[in-house]
Length: 147
Image 1 (cartoon, rainbow, N blue to C red):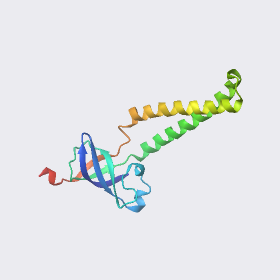
Image 2: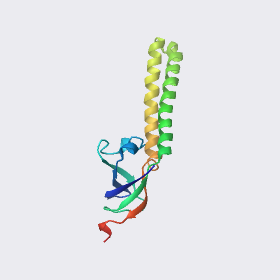
Image 3: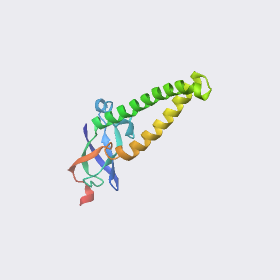
Image 4: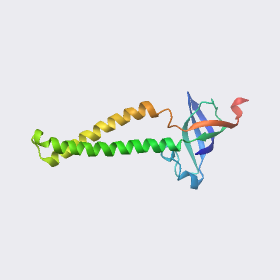
């Protein structure tokens, strides 16, 4: 999805962009959870700034819908798979641990979820941080900062 916004602030390779929300498009936006001011007429997004836009610039940004969707499928699919495998492993290992099968299933579930959360957190922190951000793709109008 593409949208227009106004650069408010820049810091290193990121920019804060004020995006004007059109009610029908905001509810469908995959970056809605990242947007500050979800219930207002405008929101502020942190976006990657490869074009080195400056405060006051009017820019086009692209929000990577398909990448967000793939990341969500990976996240929830992995948690579901870990839950099922953990419960199954706990159930089958419960006689070896000398506990009831229901307690073994619960322990397996908790252990598998904890392990999955740690692994997914590290994966998303390392691999997906760079390409899940919205990106400035064009500077429409230079602001006063340029002179």
